[in-house]
Length: 358
Image 1 (cartoon, rainbow, N blue to C red):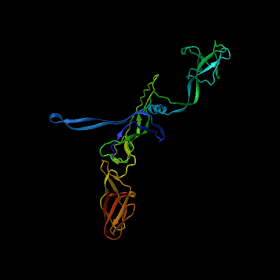
Image 2: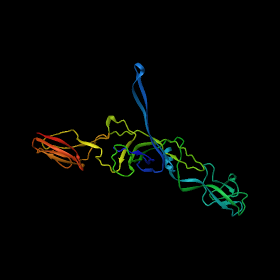
Image 3: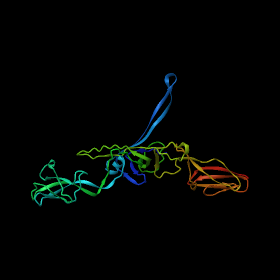
């Protein structure tokens, strides 16, 4: 059993509904897992003693903050897609060549749907609050402005179309997207009693949190200061997933948390092996594949072993066994014992008895 230290921040990958990787961040400043549940107490009898608790309103969430800006974060928070190309406000400097005429380098676009094609100008020597509005000549990148003197330098602001820009529209009734989140947290070595890690490295593994349906909170607070860097929130909650693989007992789940220890032997925390169903009863010429389970000493539930990681040896004349654990009964009644040993772990053994009869 590996007792390690969870430290530093996680890395997070986010996938869309088509399993496209849309966010992969290694620049988080904080990350956390939040599990919560409410309960109601049942009390009664003399002294109003506690008789039990009813648990409800469970939740599983992630608190994530990234130091690096990504427009995808806003799109996920507000729901919707990012489009290529946008009309943006630009500024350029121009030296007047013709009296009362200004000219811009790019094709001006309408400022709004109703404003027409307009711009704003000021002398380069004037303050920023001195900009004055003007109308472009229809279909041209020029405008007539009274009072412009040849040789004077002016600053012009106007709208252009930029094909390299990316745009996202925040709808008034937005709903945060649901994506697939995979969170990887580093696990470091500790001096805890019972640790069985042989590596000398300080980082011994990962904790991987897989959330098939992760919905961002939808709230963003981009705090911008003259001396600071804005951080972006990726926090959200898990939505229950129903697999349908467990019949009438499918209560849904939020996440799967996996502990992975680098280079750990598959049988490191296994005490013994157990054959499913115990002894085998076969008729003549019948076959059956042996299923062997690992029994752990660290609280892990028993797990099925791949038979290629075991050796099978038959002692008896009534049945045979192949390298894949397939037992075949002969046409002779009798008892055959199958010895099973984990490859490379001779101390891990078990056996089953095969009874063959007509």
